[in-house]
Every structure is written in structure tokens, then in C-alpha cells.
Amino acid sequence: MANCFASPAQSTRNLVSASSFPSSPQRPTAIIGSFLQPSKLRPALKRSLSTAPISSGNPRRFTGVRCELMDDARFMRKCVELARRAIGCTSPNPMVGCVIVKDGKIVGEGFHPKAGQPHAEVFALRDAGALAENATAYVSLEPCNHYGRTPPCTEALIDAKVKRVVIGMVDPNPIVASKGVEKLREAGMEVVVGVEEVMCRKLIEAYIHKMVTGRPFVTLRYSLSINGRMLNHLGEGAEESGGYYSQLLQEFDGVIISSDSLLKISDLPTSKETGANQPLIIIIARKDTSSVYLPGLDKKSGSKIVILSEKAIPVQPESEEIQTVVIQKLDFRAILDYCSTQGLCSILFDFREDDVGLNEFLEESFKERLLQKVVMELCPVWNATGEASMLKFGSQSLKLKDLQSRVSNGSTVVEGYIV
Ligand SMILES: [Zn+2]
Image (cartoon, rainbow, N blue to C red; front, side):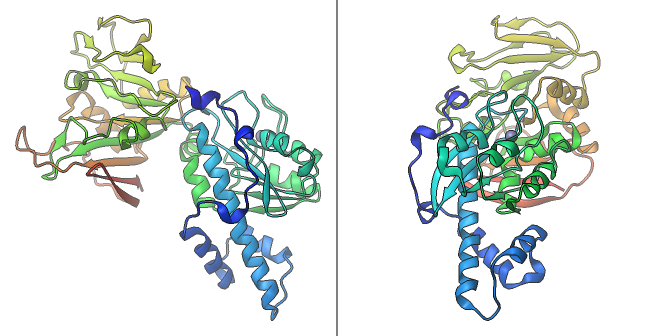
């Protein structure tokens, strides 16, 4: 749980120049490319450039603006890096990071640690103190302009006399959307919107989906052998600290697994990352399930467990950490409704070999387009046991986009978004 209660970074701050940040080679290139082709500029960048001190035919000015944009991108990546320190801890709020920059150096930084605690801007401004005056504030999500559990961050930025605000993306929350930007501009600040927007959107994709649809963001995960058969085990090292599955779990508010799958595995799905905030383990028990067995129940993991079924059901071993919820008609929509009432924004749908307990839910999720993302692990094994591929669900074809792959301990992990 350490991540959730970590100090938002003031103690670890150093005065660092922009050039010392780890940088993505793609983003600055994209920005420079956009700059060279004004017709392709995003509107927000156009606005920024239209007010920037550019003089055509003056290469020194051109270089200066280009460097400013590259610095903006670097500082925004730092915001995302900070925000991710609270991974898995902020729901139903989004992860947000903020840095205050003066004369090219970071003088304050912060992130939102968890719901109910101050926002990233507040921590960063506190960290900067008087140095925030005439500085630039970078924040991965539009500052709020409403009174929630905390006062508006727009007021905090105005009170601190920040000169310029660079924002990763506009807040999808209709209460906030663009009102924060308007408030800051009305106060006379220069405001730039849309820097490293793709990265900022990916950081809070579950929050955006929940805000727009009212439902949790659902990711389907499964493992395949090289000959295309579903596996009930994961690849080597995947569940250990640093493994892709352990890292993946800490990002989610909840993980769904069927009671049938529990009979085939030796441990409950828990992240082994240091300080990980464990997802709620949601066990789906089918109508004909007579009892639920929980393998490797480990109190030290801090996991909470809920069993969803259509009837009261005995559980072995018994534990205070386990709650049984009876839902009269247990379908996938009802499961997501339950998750929403619990404030869960992101769900990992963990599918194991020939999981008849989850097949019908997957079919429904495909039909009703309740899945948003797929993570598939291709393990370096040729599986000669069992039947042919059990990917029977899905009576309709779907397209995926933005596929990315990486190698993890010999397995290839592919992820993509359902169009
Ligand atoms: Zn705020």
C-alpha cells in the first residue's frame, strides 16, 4: 500500500534541468514535425504559436520557439512520470502530475496521491513556495475550477502568481471541461493545451472511459501457446515482481476471475510489485457451482475478495476478507454495474483455459461492446495437451487498433484497443 500513502515527491525533488529527463525519442520529433507543417498543428498548439514571439525569416527566433516546445514536451513527460507514482491508488480520481518550472529548472513537483487528498498542483505549488511567482506550471490534466473535496486548483495557480500554464489535456469531466482553461486565461495567464496529449490520455484512459460512458474500462487478458491454444498458466516470471502480469495487476481497480479458474491455479491474482495497491478480486461463481475454493489466500497481500453469484455459496477457507454478493440475474452488465457502485474505474478480465464460467460473459461483452482493450500473452511453448484453441467466444468479428508488443521473460505480450 506504500504507493498510496507515498509523499507526493517533495522530499525527492532535485533541481534538474530539462535536458536531464529521460525522453521519448518520438514525441519531440512529432512536435517539431508539426511545427514545420502548420496545417497539421493541433488547434491548441496553433493558439500557442500564434501568441509566441515568432518572426518569419528570423532563424534564431524559430529555434527558440522550437526549443520551448521541446522543453514543454519534456516537462510534460515528467508530469506523467510523477503521476504514475500513484498508479492504482487514485480511483475514482485520475492520476495527475505537476511540475513548476522557473528559468528552465524544476522548482516544485507533485502528484495526486489518492482521492480525498490535495491535487497535484497543490503539492507542486507548496513545493515551489515563492519561486512559483512568474514560473510556468505543467500539469498533465486541466486544473479543476470547482469546489470538490478540495478548493479549485485554478485559484491556487492564480494566487501563486504563476505566469504560464501548460496542460496535457482538457478534463473529460463535464464539470471541469475547459472551464479551468477559461479561468486561467481570464486571469491573464498564457495557457497552452495539448502537449504530449496522447501520453496524457493513455495515462488516464480508464478515467476518461468511466467519465464518458459511466462504466468501468475493461481489459481482457489471456495467454496462448505458440500453437494457438489457451493456457491456464502464465509465462515464466509473469506473476513475480517485475513480471508483466504483476505490473499489470497493480494498474487495475479490480480483477475478474471465475471460480472454475481458481481450481486450476495455485495463487490468487495479486501484484508482487513493492507497495502495490492490490485490485479487488472479483470471483464469478456460476449457477451450478456448489462451493468456491480460494487457493493461496495470503492476508499479507492486502487483497479484498468479493464473490458474485446468483445464490449464497460456501467458501473455503473462510476469511473476513471475503464478501459474497448475490445478484439475482448475474450477467456482464450486472457485474459492471456492481463494479461502478464500488467506485471501480478499471477492470482486468482474467480469462484462463477453456473457462466455461466466463464464456457467456465474454460473449455478452463482445455483443454489447463492453470490452475496451485486449492484452494477450504469447508463451514460448507448444501445447500438445487439451483440446484445440478455446477462443470460442465472440460470435462477431472485431477490429483492434494501436497494437503494441513487447517481450517479457521470453513471452511476447501484445496489447491493443477494440475499435
Ligand atoms: Zn484540482
